[in-house]
Image (cartoon, rainbow, N blue to C red; front, side):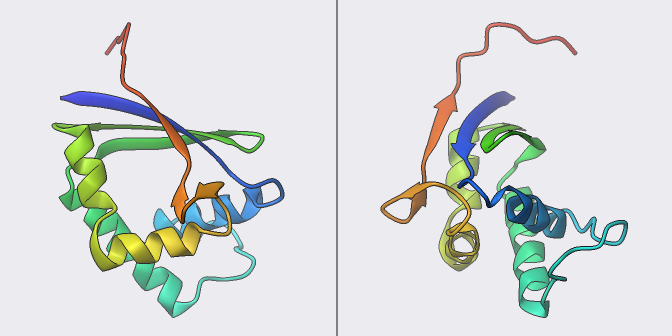
Length: 123
């Protein structure tokens, strides 16, 4: 199993929308009031994205936020392959478009720094 961390940036002022969209992805909007509430299209895209990430072999995925910095962590048997599969095809493109106004991007793709060197792990 591999572990990976990557860092991204949310555009200033878009932090609440980033959180809202990920609450949709986690289907945890029954315990909070989302403003605006999810559309049918948003809910369908989030469900498809969730399923695509699972099929890509992504496990134990967490994202942490401090100010507008985002730190994402996940585990997979092959992290590089899982990232490629999770972001591929129509669903991947729609998710990137869905997040386009929220994440700092270059050439239509989120700017992120991958950190692969693990120096310590404790279960």
